[in-house]
Image (tube, rainbow, N blue to C red; front, top):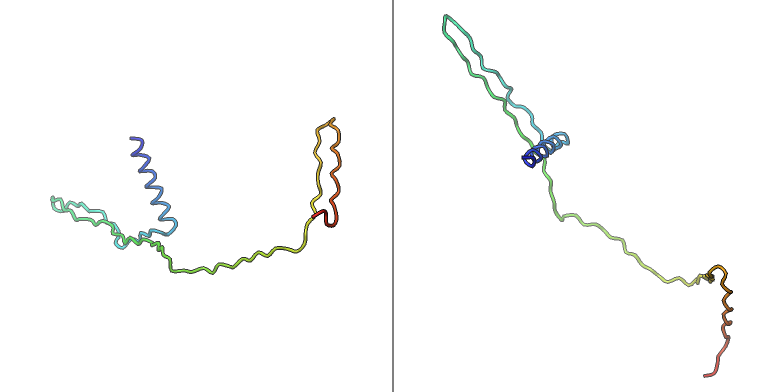
Amino acid sequence: MRAVFLILIVAVVALIVAVLTGMVKLPMTQPAVAPTVAVEDGKIITRPGQTPAFDVQTGSVEVGTGKTVAVPKVEIQPSDTRIAVPSVEVRRPGAAPAPAAPAPVQGNSAQ
């Protein structure tokens, strides 16, 4: 039973949102008239009323693939500049310093 009430509440909220956003328009084309009851010469005379009439206008949503979008071309070129990254020494507190790295050898070594 709770599910039925929840579905009804969601449907009513969706209808309210559709009307407020202009997706659904409900202009009245014929106003409502209540029936009349009168007594004339001891007789009861009734005249029928009329129900309101509405012209329901709904919005439309179109989905398609008719548009094309130009995608920019991206080119990546390697740089000639080199970035020197300093070395960082990580030690535990109280540990002895690490020995220095040997210097790089210049020139040709034995072939």
